[in-house]
Image (cartoon, rainbow, N blue to C red):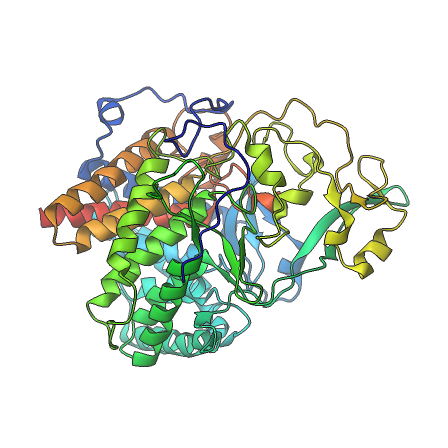
Length: 560
């Protein structure tokens, strides 16, 4: 039975819109001179090839920085043992952030290199040794991921394995022995991923960890950041990102894997979507980030609030169902009892088209720029999973100019949302703002005083835009319906024109010089806002999907 949760807060937006017409201006907007291509929202094959050549040159630059240990943000865990290999992930300050092993993003770095290698015929200006450098680097980082194929404690094996080992199989320069090893690693990983599926629930479980609230305390004059358990944690959480695992299972002729993937898609389509209160005709389904199948409640670990439209979540939703619709043609099981996935995908396309009507690169959450965005952030309905990251995101964790959403202010929460053990630990402690954290039955993680008015920029998320474009081109390449092809590709072209003209790191915009010099491709991605991490900065997976979108654009052009 489909679960639709209508928002309890009253929107001040125009009734027919999923966004408000009045939005804060970015203080770091692109200043590139408009071209005929950008003004017409046209994206050409020539532009796609130029983007791929730019990406190749950038990643050769990034490789050189890493190999020379230059401009690196290296955490303590990276030096735990001589064998510990950390992986480029994002930009932190003016440095390349190196991620420790066993993180969900670690497959994207070799994945980017494999993509560039497989796209080599559409990349210009190859210099002697460049292809070999990309190849050797990809091989080196790929070796660090073999052990991940047996790590059953994570659902992210699609990102870690399929977006690296799977990408490598597209490169014609891969030798037969290595290719066979990669195929085996993928097979082992599929079997491991399948262990996270439960027949009774019909979904792949996302997380094993228990959600905790980050609280900032002053201890003996020192600023401390620690985590505290909440009173009602989820029991069977499934996040919409998990839709991106399904292609990994579909890329096998194993009927059991197909059954798992289609069942997961079925329950996701039925439970993970809601309609904005202004969408009275229920035309535009929006995806929650997380659904707890234990408590039967939706929510957002990421996003402005428990009921909001996290931009990258909508991207995982769209892309995931593109892969489901493709897989139906080669399904190894009977699909007669399953929902109409094609109709669901069409509705998701309509939502993305509608959400992007004012700007093709979204705010990190589509609700963040609404005049009443703070109401979504502070809405703690009993019908949803109570806790989400924004609740304890204090201003001192952010750069002074960053604004998470309109109306951003300290929150007064119910102390009962934390466990008894957490409340005992926090008793008598003060926060970084010099106020007691627990006052009666209230919890004040960020104090009570207004935040500085320097917080003015609501970040956008180019990684979400790149995923939209890659998904749209992918479906345009798949569909046999000419009108659909033109519709999906047309929207993707507009997104890519915007990203290319205004968000490449070589475009003239204040503050992007270091991103270009470090070797990144796209600026202004947003990662984990609720934890104050990777905000308004290049992130590897944004580059990954931007490269993919260019490749799929060229594939489409070659068919016409």
